[in-house]
Structure formats: structure tokens, C-alpha cells
Length: 213
Image 1 (tube, rainbow, N blue to C red):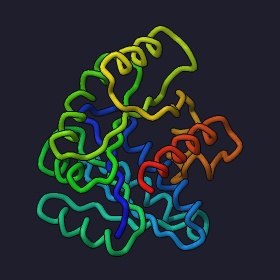
Image 2: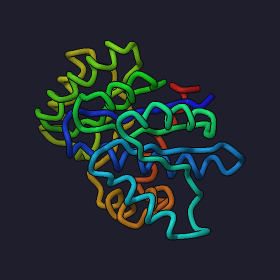
Image 3: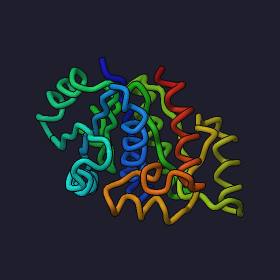
Image 4: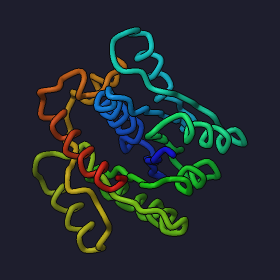
């Protein structure tokens, strides 16, 4: 039975879709020995579907991913199908708390909530954490697009600590490499494997794999 990771955040623009893509690509590369990785796009913008189309067009290049983009009544059956076909499923959920988002959280073995160092992102994360708690699903905040240092990063880290919200220790920096790789249908660990961005992604993935083991 597949392990399911749902990336959820009720606010748009937090880097939810790109996080799914980079994690999926890194997992697929690590899965060369036989682990099957699937991605499921339930975001109405379907940016992940476009990324996957670019990836598929590369032919024999990057490791292949199982892909689905259902919505509404088709979402539940699609998740059940991917549970049987894959070893790890990553779900990109809608940027609001609706029926699809609730289902994506309900089936998750781990919910990841990307948060940029800004007050609106932190405020929106509260609702997503509440949804995960209501569904009794483990959740972790992921600090995303973060500067190496600065007042806002210090503020958001202090706020998370004060509220005792669970977060991953690893963070992703505000690096152009993440967006550039995404635009080519790749993950950062494929496009620039020796970069600082790739090292950050691998550190994040190490923590995630420990949580879903």
C-alpha cells in the first residue's frame, strides 16, 4: 500500500505545486531500484499537469512518474487506484479548504504545509493545520522561499516556535534554481544536482522519508 504525502495550504502562491514537483522528481530518482512514484494534481490551475507534460516530452530523460489529475467524484477512485499502483503518492491539493482538499488531507500519511516568511502565509497555515488535526493526520510546516537571514524569517520562525506548531527543520531558500528546473519539467536534484538548492531539497526529503517510513 502506497504512502501518501499531501501538500496543502489554503492560501495560493506559497510554492505548493513546485514543492510537489521537486519532491516527486527526487523520489523518482531515488526509486531507480524499483519504487514507483505517483503525482496527483487536484489544483484547479493544473500547473503540475503542465510540468508533467514537459517532463514526459523529454522521453527517456528523467525517471517516469505515474500521473493523474482527477477532480470531484473521480478523486476518491483515483487515489484508490494510485494506492495500488505506486509506492509513494504525492498530492497537490487545491489552494482552499473544499471537498477535494479535505479528502486529500484525510487520506494522507503526512501533510506538508509550505509557508513563506510572511504573515499571510502563517495565518493561512493555521486553518490548514486545523484541517489536518480534524482529520487526525500528522502535519509539518515547510519553510519555503526563505532568505538565508532577515527580519521576516526570524519573525516567522519565532511565531512557529511560540505556537508550538510542528515544522521540518530543513528549509528551502529563495533560489531561482527551483523555478528554472520546474519550467523545464525537472526537479532541482536533476537540473542542478550539486547546487545548494538541491542540497536543501535532499535534506527536506530525508526528514520526510523518516516520517513516512
